[in-house]
Length: 216
Length: 216
DNA sequence: AAAGTCATACCCCAAACGGGTAATTGCGCC
DNA sequence: GGCGCAATTACCCGTTTGGGGTATGACTTT
Image (cartoon, rainbow over all chains, first blue to last red; front, side):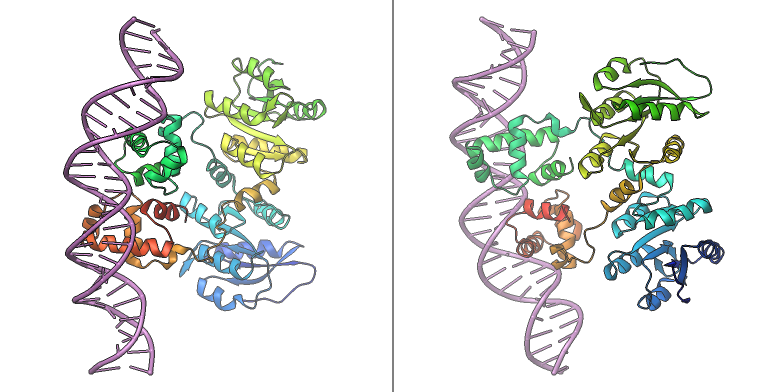
C-alpha cells in the first residue's frame, strides 16, 4: 500500500504484519508533524514488489513476517540504499534475533512493549544520528563487548612467554621449520614447545590449539 | 570525600575531576528523590583509597582523570563487585575510548554535552536494567556489529557444499579419519576435498584454511 | 645447596598430512 | 541422447607432525 507524498515531512515506510499494531504505529506516525508514512506493507513479498518505487530513507520493520524475515528485508534495503535507517520493532528479545538484525545493519531495535512516546522519541533519535534501543536491548548489546576476562584467567595464560610466541607463529599457518627460523631455535625445540602447549591447552593437535588461540 | 547514608535512596558514587562539572552532577543527584551521592572522588588514587568502604552499586565515572584512566577504575570496581553498574560520562567520543570502556564492563556511556534531564533519565534507565548511551555513542556501538557486507562474496563462497562440510569439521580440530566417519566417505576423499579447499582459499595447509574459515 | 621451572636440543617411530593422478557420478545444454 | 564440466569419490607416495623419552644449562625459589 503506497500513499502520496507530503511536503516538509520525512517519508518513512512501515513493514508490519500485525494489523492492529500496524494501525497503531501508522496512526502514531500520522500524528507527528515531522514524519509521514509513504507506504505500508505486511509481507516480505509485497514489500519487495513495492520497494523500487519508494523514496523513504527510514524503515520501520517487524522481524517476524508471515512469508519471511524482516532481517533479510533489512539486508535487501541496505544493499540498494546504504544510508537507509532501519528501525527494528519486534517481540523477539533473544540474542540471535538481536545480533542478526544488527549484523544486517539495523540502526535501532525496539521491543513491541515500548511506550508510544518512547517510540516517537526513537524516530527523532534515529533521524538525528542516534540508535534507539529498548533498555533491555541496549544492555544486551553493551554487555556483549564486555571482556569476560580481566579476572577470569584464560587457559592461554598458562603458557610461558616462549610458548606463546610459538603458538602465535603456528596460528599463522607456519611449519615447524618456519617457526624455528623465525625464533632462531631448532625445529626440535619448537616441537617441544608445541607439545607443552598441547598439554596445557588440553588439545591433541595444532588445529585445536589454533582454534583456542583465536577464540581468546 | 565520603558522605553519610540516606534511607530509601539508592547510593551512588561520583568520580569526576572537573570541579564545576562534578558540582553540577552532584547537585543533580541530590535533587532527586531516588538517588544520593555516597561519595565523590576526583582522582584514581583517592578513589582506590576510599573504595573499600563504599556500599554503592552505581558508579558515575569520568574517563580522563589527572592520575589515570576511569577505564581501569571500572575494571577494578567490577573485579570486586561484578554486579556494579558503571556509567561513563566523558568528553571522548572516539572508538578507542568507547570500546575500551565497554570491554572494561561499562553499563552505559554518556557524552558530557548531554542535557541534564537526559542524564537523570539515564540513572533510572541504568537502575532498571538498561544501558543509557548518548545517541552518537549508540549509533557507533550498533554500527560496529554491521557485517561490512553481506554482499561482498567471501572466498569461502567459492567452496562447494561438500567442501564446506569438510572444512567445518576440520575447523573443529578433527582428523581426516573423524571427518571421513562423520561424512561417511573415505579418508582419501576427505583429503581430496581439503586439497581443493587449499587451492580455492589459496593456502598451503589446514591451519591457514581454518584461520580463514574462522575469520569469515 | 637442593628443588623446580624454563628454554634449549636430540633421537625414534607411528600417525597424520599434502600433492599428483584418476575413476565415477550428476547435471545442464545443445 | 549424448557432450562437457564440475563435483565427488578414491588410491599412492613422500613429507610433516605428534607423542614418547632423555639431557643440559640458566635462572628462581626455597
